[in-house]
Length: 46
Figure (cartoon, helix red, strand yellow):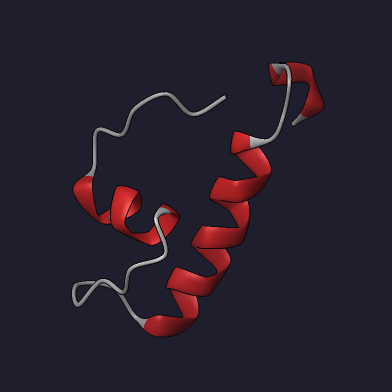
């Protein structure tokens, strides 16, 4: 479902790279949420 990113840091996290701008514990949670959003078929799945 994710087609593009406005924020480059979010794109890095989604791609599996580490961002120097965000704390590590936030990055792990953000990555899981981005994956969840990516694999949803419809907005109602969220």
